[in-house]
Length: 472
Image (cartoon, rainbow, N blue to C red; front, side, top):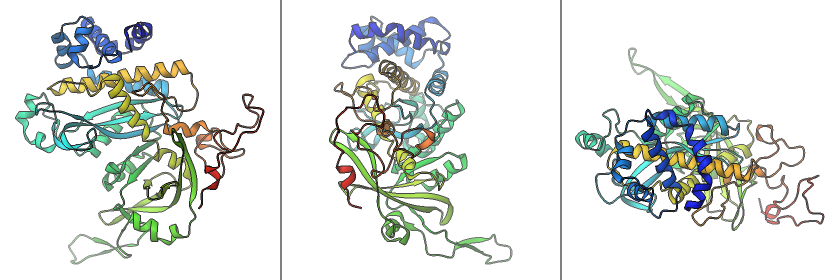
C-alpha cells in the first residue's frame, strides 16, 4: 500500500490495534507496534526493521529493541489473535490447516538455521523452518492463528548456541508433527473451535499423529503417502504367552498391513466400486474435477489395527496419473463430499503464506535471536489478520473466493469456494446449509443460475460439458 492508502485505513487500523493494547505496559512499545504494522502494510520493497524505521522516522535501534528486548507480552498478543478469530470468524464448517514454511538464510546465526529441505527454493538449502496453524472458513476468510520455530536436533544439542540466540532452555527438538499438535492444542485452549483439521502427507505419514488426533477427539482429513499402511478389513488380533510370567504378546491373525496404493488398486472393496466425480473449484484454467472412491480403513499402529477410519483415493479427472490418498476419522456415515472438501482445503494456508510474504514481508526479517523472530511471526500474523478483515468488510459477507490480493494485485481462487455453489434441489448441504461440494452428476453447471434467482439472466445459459462428460 502507498502512503495515501495507509492514511485512508488509519482509523480502522487504530480501532483494530486498540484490541491489543493490553499486551503493553507502556505507551512507547504500543506506538512502536503501530509503526511496525504500518511498515508491513506499506509498499516498501524491503520490510525489515531498518527500512521501516527510516521510512517512518524512527531510529532503527529503537525498533530493533522493540522486537528483541522490550518488555511486552507477545504470548498475550498471540492469544488475542486467536480470541479475535474465535469471536468474529467462527464457522461450523471451518478448517484448521497445518503446514510449514521456510526462510532461506545465508549465515549461521539465525535461530534454527541449517541445511535442510527448503520449500522456498525447492531443494536442500540453508534455511529456517516454522510450523503454522491456519484457519479457513467457507465464506472466504483465512488467517494464520499461530506459528512456531522448528528447532533442529543439531541446535537442540548445542545449548550454548541456543543461549547465544536467546532460545529458552525449555525449548528443545520436537518433530514437526509434535509442534503441530502443540499449535492445535494451544488454539483450542484459547477458545478457537476447529471442527476440522487437515494436513499434507508429510504430517499424515506418521501413524502416531493420527493416534494423537483420535485421542483428542479432533476430526481430521490427512493426505497420506502411498506407503502408508493399514487394512480395509479389520484383522483379528490374537495374544500368546510364551512364558507364564511373560506379558501378553499380541499378533495379527490375518495378512500383514498393506500399502494404501495397493489397497486402492487391488482390494475388492475398491475394485468393485465405480468412480464418483466431484467438482472441486474453478481455476484460471477452468474447473477442477476429481474422481474418488472410499472404504473403511484401519490404520496400522505398530502392527496393530486402530479404530475404523475413511480411506479415500482421488484422481484428477483430466490427469489420471495425479492421485491422492486421504485418511480421515470422520463418521463413517459422513458425506464423502464433506470429507473431500476438507481434504482439498489446504490451498488456504498456501495463500496465507503467499500473502504474508509478498504483501506483509513475513520473510524479510533480519534478526539473530529467538524472541525477535517469534515476535516478528506474531506481528506478521496480526497484520495479515487486519488485511483479511478489511478485505472481508469491503467486499461484504458473501460466499465465494474472497481472497486477498496476490502479488500481482489479482484475485485468486479459493479451495473453499466450493461452498459458493448452491446445492441441488432437495439435497442437504454439509452442516445443514444450502451449499457444499457435490458430485458433478448432482450439481448444476457453474454458470447455471439457481431456480428463482432474481439476478439470473432471462436467456438459457450453456451447461459446462466437462462436468457431465467425464467417463467413470
